Amino acid sequence: MAGNVCPQCGAPIDPGATECRFCGEKFATQQAAQQMQQPVYSSPQVVVQQAPPQQVYVTGINPAWPIKSKVAAGLLGIFLGGIGVHKFYLGQIGMGILYVCFCWTGIPALVGFIEGIIYLTQSDEIFALKNHVRVG
Image 1 (cartoon, one colour):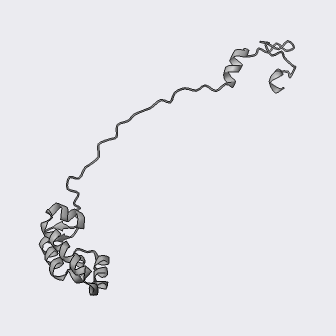
Image 2: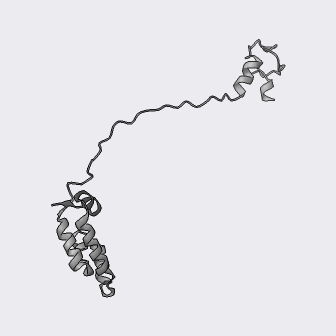
Image 3: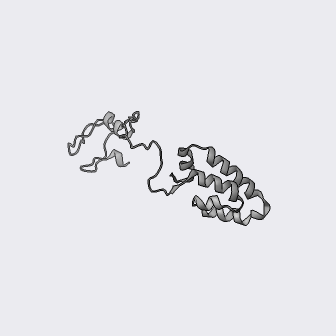
């Protein structure tokens, strides 16, 4: 009922009226009122922005990493891998402790031997990236 009264004087109005018959207040046409009540949907607009170029590291080797020898790590893995010396050398203290805890089983000796061979046959860049060291 609130839509059927004049906003100026409050008198009842006819649904198709364009002005109040009592105070003369002009109304929006019925068509405009219907357009205002019905939501208008439009297709979303897509805005594409190109991101600025980012700096790309080719090698990915951090200059803050410690310098370690690939050959030393490989030889430590082959000869002392059973007690995890190669892991301690590379700064992987947790893995070194794990090797020491299970050294009585012989499994760390086998794994250390294999890791030592892998260290010696890897390229310098792959060794550095996997172990977070700089090859020196």
